[in-house]
Image: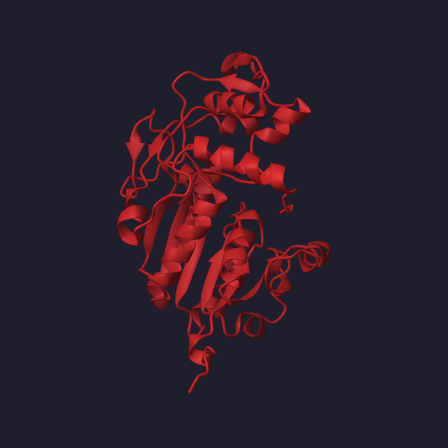
Length: 310
């Protein structure tokens, strides 16, 4: 008789390469369900900061970056049933797989792997729709690195037959990460580039999709994680300002904005991304189907309590 206790075979352990904003939102969700959580940070200071937060469970942390692989990967990864990587690729490739491809492939009992990529892999579609069957045509170096990383994770599946899932994320927002901060401190800029639209995704919707995927692993499948309505950045900023009860910053034409090369890259692509696959495969109903519901919820959450910094 189990007396309601989970058996060893039922125990679930999530290991996150990269305990950042998105991963920690998922951690809070799974910790409430009794999962064991472990993951990596880049500095001892970040490990201490996490230890001081109320995340619903004690998180076992390990130091990791490209120049510092896990000291004892076998011990760190032992017992892992689900593995998530949010570590971005660099010029040399995917740091996680470059260091620990064989360690991950050798894991026994690993039921699910998720890699957080970006809808940037589709490149510019001139405002047209694209889904997971679309060709990968990134317009910038960061997008090309993501395509190469996706192929590396797919190769892990092909060589190990592990259930690897590619999650292509749109622009992430949520409490502590939205247009409100810049609007409040006066640094927001409403740059207008006619015809440019893109999707977004609330961090809580990312967490619910990842959890749903964990409950029913597939095999080497890609999923777009985005909302139902692509919109221009200027439209979203104007709506956020309306919620705050302030005037939006003046519109500035893209050509006159004098943006840095990094900032310009966010205006390079225009597309509408379909999320039908997550709805069909997982029965997902988005908590925040557009930026309007999402921003209202963010403002409510930030008003109720100061968010935990990522």
